[in-house]
Amino acid sequence: MTFLPRSLFGALALLVLLLMHVYAWQRLVRAPRLPRLWHRLLTVVLVGLFLSLPAAFAVMRNTPLAERLGLTTTAFVWLGVLFYTILLLAAVDLARAAAAAWRWARRGGGRPSAPACAMPVGEAEPAAVPDDGVSRRELLVRATAGAVVLGAGSTALAGWRGSGDITVPEVPVRLARLPRTLDGLHIAQLSDMHLGMLVDGRFLRDVVQRCNSLRPDLVVITGDLVDAEVPALGPEMGPVFDLKSRWGTLFVTGNHEYYSGAEEWVEFLRAGGMRVLMNERVAVGEGGLVPDASGPGLDIAGVPDYRGGRGLPGHMPDMPAALAGRDPDRELLLLAHQPKHVYEAAEHDVGLQLSGHTHGGQLWPFGQIVRLVQPYVSGLHRHGDHTQIYVSRGTGFWGPPMRVAAPAEITSIILTV
Image (cartoon, rainbow, N blue to C red; front, side, top):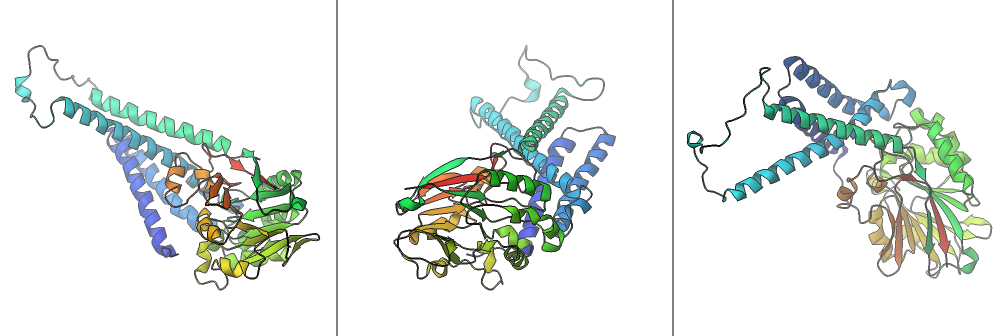
């Protein structure tokens, strides 16, 4: 598995953002032929909003949330509005192109149209330009631009209102090798909280309280817990160690831990008493989680995210190392941040993989793009003859503080025989 260098990825992302802003400016400012004052004012606003995005990314990982003076909030709210603005503008342009193609087909394809001077008798004259110098076409363009902005803003507002609504789906999963003594085992899955970007300890405390109210046997966190470095976010992280369950909390890294100092975060979480699985496994025994066991039972393995192999010893995902020496008759559960791990999981006879990463798309219809790079976007699926995978929509959000048709969740996994 290879990745673009982070600097190249950042440059490409910046280019895409620039092109999005240019397209929005072309269709919302230039095409409507606005009065000069409005043209200049909106141009300055768009330039400022564009610059706010790289600035927000630059400060969010090493600056406490309270010290950012609203920069990241403004930038990422705008990113959500921009996403739906581009989506609606593209839909309008596609509709116009389809209408033009239909008119072209009605005229008989390539037949030349009659010269303007040979207008048939009785055909209407071109619309006159009103006294204020604005033609009907320009009025239509302005009305369309206004409707797009209103639609994008309304969708973003609805998504913002829904971003804090955390659902608690109960997901029963039948596992063939699970012993009857573990029938009904309850696992609470948290994923993709992205603490430190736009949410802090208050959000974390609420999540912990909700999770504890489920009274699970085990809590698992499948990556992207943090989006800031330990010095900036560490003081807010106390509540994560208040998670309560019969057998404690297991954690595997996601890709965003590697943007925020993964080695320091692994050390921080371990120092607080959390079990971080780095190509390791534990077994469910009578006394709780034990390093190894044989006979009927359940093994839980965890691998780091794919990005862990970029220069960090021991952080490259290595499933054979995590499973070496295990009893193949025992049921096997895998914690892996990205759903694409399921291909290798199926080869190693994993019964159930728990993943996150996709956010369920977060902003409809972005999930359709996610499907191009991940085999599953959300929910429970069977992969092959034996392996199942559950993909969480995530407990928090990333980027725009919005969720549209992809509510956040704390997942209640119930293992059954």
